[in-house]
Image 1: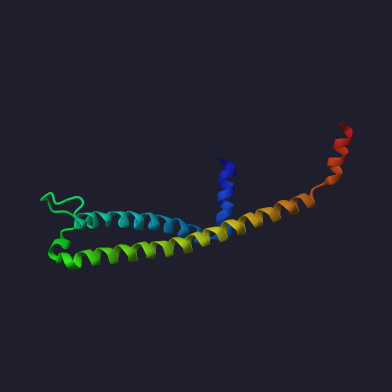
Image 2: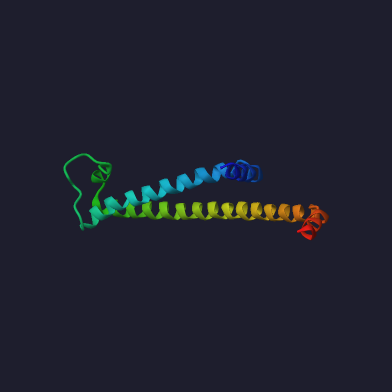
Length: 131
């Protein structure tokens, strides 16, 4: 566990607060995916495949006051804009995550190579010859 915490501390020191913003961004992406799936309910109801009209007041009562000729294009437009916005946001977030990961792995690789170069190779050769 200590090794994991050391790794996370080093990652945070490398990336700074952008790591927290990326985690928050991933939560927002999940929320937007949930909203886009939720928008499929009135879309299916308007298409007539399944009738979700149970007589109770629901989330989509506003759509009953709008004429059916306008409600379908409004739902479709909202759905498309939400999915496109979510995909653009997700693409930007993934690009930042890849930049952080590649930069951090490169930093670890360079530090490992420097530690190998600075090691006491004379000690290791003497120990090997004694075995």
